[in-house]
Image (tube, rainbow, N blue to C red; front, top):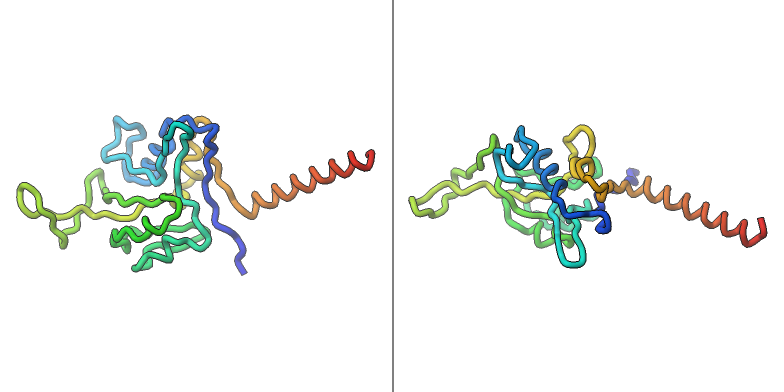
Amino acid sequence: MDNKLNAFVTADPAKCIGCRVCELACSVAHSDQSGATVGTLTAPVIPRLYLVKTPEVTVPVQCRHCEDAPCANACPVAAITQTHHTILIDADTCIGCKTCMLACPFGAIDLVPVYRGGKPVSQSALKVESQAGLRDKEWIVANKCDLCHDRDGGLACVEACPEKALTVIYPPKDQKRRNREAALNLLHSMKSFMGG
């Protein structure tokens, strides 16, 4: 039985300065763009996490890779699956129905246009009205954090954050660490209580 839990990224709002470097790093890591700064990018910045700023807090919102993922359960075409302890969206299968967006309790899924070579990809079978007449509609798909599953070197957002506000949580490993810390704290308390 495979008892590994899905990893996820968490953010420390006390450390986040709202610089959006995580968004830029994410977008570049998931595109075919060669640029690494906003001025050199050839397509829009489309991150898989989104910075939320309020008067009280600034923090990125991203997928929690739920164990019983509501988005996957809601997807009518099975475009969302779990692979190697990561919840992934197959853009080629996604029909852009928005059901996953409604199902996600964290608001971590967005619909975005698909770009290849810096240009939007169109659906030739679906037309939309424009001032010039009918034109091909842009291909729109669901988009969310995939834990940089195809990227060597780990998660782009975590690596790029200048304040180290983002952390990857590996639940079994993290739980063992917390259990060990709790046991050591209990041991120290018992020694103090017993005069040792």
